[in-house]
Length: 235
Image 1 (cartoon, one colour):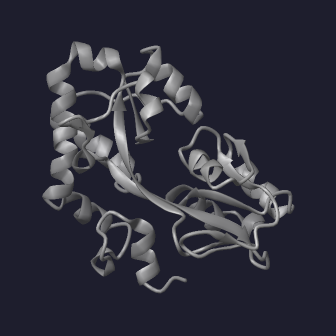
Image 2 (cartoon, helix red, strand yellow):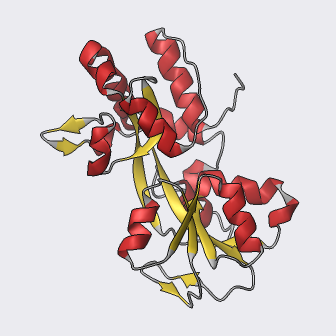
Image 3 (cartoon, one colour):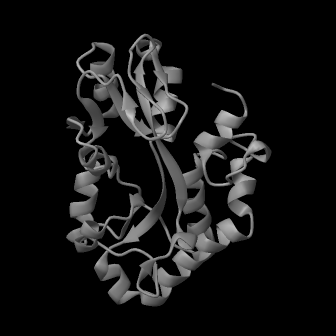
């Protein structure tokens, strides 16, 4: 594996080395990941935002009956991506000059957030397709993860006219979610993995790794990549 595979894969690599297990990565659309987890055809999935309705698919780290945010895997932010000259903006509380539907990745938690705002949402499993629909002005914008969508803009000339609004629409903790079968069969192992994720944050290892991807000393929020980059003056 690359020395810089991305922070999430680096965390998984660390867990595998410490607890001596092999990892087989299977790339699937998010809704399929959840169904595979429910069917116990995979043991775990990561980047899972906690939603109560997802408890039918698998298990999250809980403490005293509440989701334990200290044992998250990472935090990530949803941002608005739009054409440079598009009138739509996000002021931190509401969209202004919204003149059409917004795109969002199929099954992602941001869909519920946007629906609760009364916004018309177009879903697709492909962020690339949604960005192309923004480019063609079929969508007013796309609300996607900073760490996934922003690199697409930087490496693909097709998206050179698309920009990202700097204020996050939502910043949320994301978890390593296990199948119910995995927790039943190996409860101690599952707990140890979640505990280690908590230690990665509390002992500063996450921050150390992030410094190899970003100038993390500039961040006031050690888990929010978007705030870090914003403080560095990228916008």
